[in-house]
Length: 206
Image 1: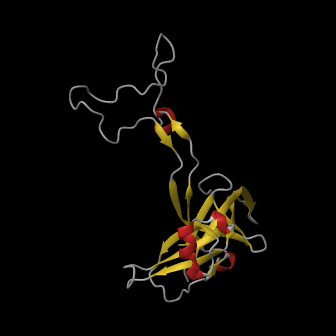
Image 2: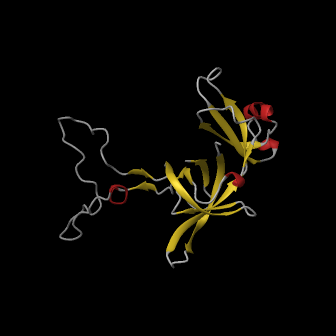
Image 3: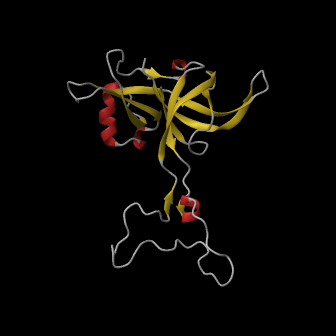
């Protein structure tokens, strides 16, 4: 059975095994997600499902999405995401994925955005070494030469320079589930998850 849900990162903590081993874990709050569209090879050329979550007042939903969501009977969802599948026959429009679809010991794929670091220099972004700090040097954290002059007379693509760092979408594969709290919709997974506490995540079964 395919499972695809939205979630929010709560934060990190640690758990102790009976042997005394410490395991770092991340708490994730699962948001019940409803299937809003089912795509197939006949009409769309591929098979996929679209899930939606996070209810909001109808005035906060974009008008094109309101018409699109009428088929599923849920017009107040603000966040939509498509997930490719192999076979859509076992799924139905309006089906709700929740924390009950997960079990301890299985693995999941978690997607999210890393922490944004803003416009960063070469030392922070690419681990460059700095220049001399004394003897009249004026190139402490300067990038230095970025290429020859007349030939090629331009900066080659891919040159490591200062720029935007972080805030990139990454996916962690096969993250193990160590605990489940159905009462609070909490999922406890091994290790760290991208982003700050409160960041939105997208979780699918591996």
